[in-house]
Each structure stands twice: as structure tokens, then as C-alpha cells.
Image (cartoon, rainbow over all chains, first blue to last red; front, side):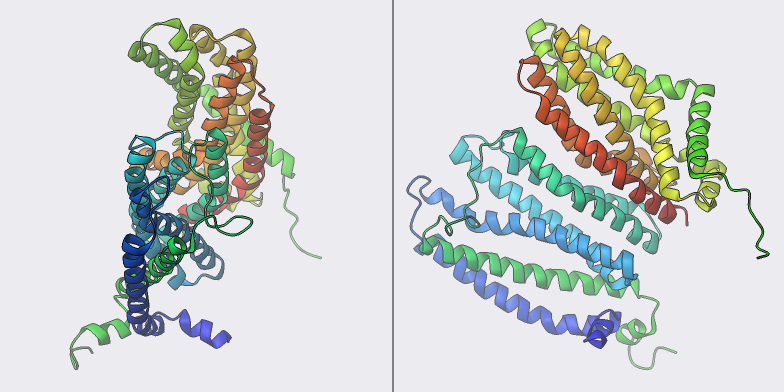
Length: 250
Length: 232
């Protein structure tokens, strides 16, 4: 088992392995999203209160969940990179940040569009989750800005890893404090005692969307890590062999 | 045993000498102490001029204004926390010294609070009076500001350590620290607002105290790690 991990941490091995996984992740993700979108938009019953407007949930919830998932992945791989000095996991953290920022942005956009018919405003400061999602976006911006400001890759990796970990400690506190501040958002729908408070006709497409988004995120992440690895190892022999035509490399 | 015996200062004397040195340096250059205070007073002046002079509005927005101004003033001064030490090379010596680096980081943050946070807490009643805040609010404001500025100095020291030696450090530092400092702002400003409305304030004060303890115990380690990374 350890050999598997050791091999995984080697950039050329990971580069090849990721290439095998990406199409699978892509196909599974696309299939789930296709089912979720069709079933969610056409077959799921309309909400008795919100009508058809609730259907934006099929994009909103997966993006919001991935915005936090991406931060988790970023922080955990940053910690692994910092503790065990595995360069590949720093590359994973670097690749996860922009993706996480995009999903956060998507969650904010869809939340804001959803808020327009439901609350009558594009933006509601009284809603804790909207506000903490915005702070999440700022955390991503800070992380990426710090990374961009340091020229030396090794140094940028370590410094941004410290920041990611400090952020990970703070995220629950930020969520809690914003929640204490005020609340207007509807309570948790999926994860709560006594099972989900949502009809199965609405639930299955949502779960499919969540799975699909996760797999697509996985495919995108692996693709980004591959390019990141390729760039970081640009002076290594295996990259030369890969990029230059046969016989051109000394 | 023929190991050379170094005449090492104890943990507490090392800690105190770092604090004394920083406070002394600030004393010799009073601008470092006064600039954030002037900044704090001026930002507080901006709001009445922008919002209007009606006293109900001022009393309503006062707690928020004081807290935003305090946050910005603390950020402004944080950039210089390790800057001069980095430039003249004494940061290298601090890192190389046999004193544990987290203790040194804690001492630097404490000195920063003594130089910028404490004067700000002491000056804040003046601003509060101009904002027509009731008297019982002022004590709550000073308590929350004390906990808040200590937390800000410690939290900010992480950011200052990460950005030391970088160009465009100030803007970057704000970008790193502001989202993390949001709980302090929320609880600080809300607690003062609650006090102004004669409501219970203990929850907010407890939270700020707890947050202060959290940063006191954890932030020096993150700062030390960041200093090692920035200075390698």
C-alpha cells in the first residue's frame, strides 16, 4: 500500500495516472449532470411555495458544497505538502484554489439570482450564508494573491500553505459569527435529523447533480494538476521526453 | 562534559527584551505610534462628514464606525511589524537565536499591541463621545476593543510574517487579514450596538475573549512558521 502512495507522489506517475482517470470522471460527471438537469428541470414537481424558481437549487447547492470541498482539499493537501514535503500535493493545492474560487462565485451568483424572486433583493446582507460565502471568496482571493506575489515556487507553496491552514481554522469561526449576526436563509434541507425535508422527486436529481458536479470538479482538478506538474517539472527529463519530438533531446 | 556553556538568557528575559526593544524603538520614532492614532481619528471623522451630522444617525452608526476605523488603523501599522527587522537583518538574528521563535513572535505581537492597540483603546472614548454614544456603552466598547486589538495584532502578525520582504506588501496584507478578521469586527461592533440598546452584552464579550485566547495560543506558532518560510 505504501508503494502505491510513494508512486502516486511521483510527478510522472501521477501525470499518467491522472490522464487515465480524467475521461472516466468526465463521463460519469456528465451523465449525472445530464440526468440531474433533465429530471430536475422538467420532471421534478414544482415547489408549493417557490414554484419553478426553486429549480436553481440544482446548480446552487452543488456549487456551494464544492466551494467548501475545494477549500478542504486545498487545506488538506497544503498540510500534507508542508508536513511530508510532498511537492505534488502543493501542486494540488495550487490547482484547487482557482476552481474553488469559481465555484464560490457560481454559488454567490445563483444565490443572488435565487434571492431576487424569493426575498425581492439581489443581495441580502441579513443572510448569513450569503455573507460567509462572500468571505470564502475573499479567502480564496487572498490565497491566490499571496501565491502570485511570491516568485519562488517553493516559497510560494509553503507560505500559501500556512495561509490555507490559518484560513481552515478560521472558517468555522467565520461561519458561526456570521450566523450569530443574523439569519434569514432557510434552514438546512438535506442534512438534518429525521431525514431530508424534500420530496424524493426533487431529491434524486439534486443528489445526482451533487455527484455529477463532484466528478466534473475532480476531472477539472486532475487536468489542472497535470498542467501544474508539467510546468513545475519543465526542466525535468521526463517532461523533455514527453514534449520534444523523438531524438531531439540529448 | 566539555560542552561550552553558553550564557543563555532565560525564556522570560528573552521575551521581555524583545518587547522592550520594540517599544523603545517606537518611543524613539513617535510617528509610528501617532500615525495610526491620527488615522483612526480621521477615518472616524470621515463618517459624520459623509453620512450627515444628525445625532440619531451618528449614535446608531457609531459602534460600527469606531470598529472599522480601529481595524483599518491596526492594518495600517501591521505592515511595519517585521519590516525594519527584515531590512536591517535583525530578523535573521531573531530566527537564529536559541529563544523559541513562537515566543519571539508573541513578544513582537505584544509589543505591536502596546504601541498601536493600547493607545487606540485609550483614545476611543474621545471618538465615542463625539458620536453621542451613551456612557455605559463606552466601557463595553473599551473592553471589546481591548480583546479585539490584541487578537488583531496576533492575527495580523501571521499576515505580516507571510508578506515580509514582498513588494506591494500592504495591499496584500489587507487582502489576507481582512476576511480572517471579520469575526472580530462582527462581534465587536454588534456587542457595542447591543450595549447602546441596553441589551445583554456578555455573549459578545465572551466570544471576543475566547477568540483572543485562541489567537494568543495558536497565532505565534503560525507566525513563527511563516517567518521561517519568508526568511529562508
